[in-house]
Length: 120
Image (cartoon, rainbow, N blue to C red; front, side, top):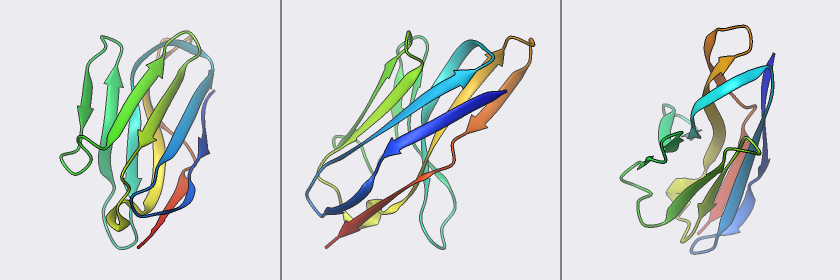
């Protein structure tokens, strides 16, 4: 069993900042990628940012220069610092991870999601 538990999020005015955190736990042998996706009402889920275990990061064009992803491999956590928030950033944000478990199985895991709301 693997769990991803998110924290953070909430309501912020446009131009403000919020941070999200996610902790992975369970039968984990190795985490390859950790990151964030989001889904706004009426829209498809989209990649926000990822951080692989080689240290490479990837961002959606819409958040480049405003969001920063970081990762603590020892703690199995990933964080997303969101600055200069825009109304279009409002969505449910999901922590995601590609994990190789102690049962020698690969899996793509998702957290339960945390709401980010941005007022204009």
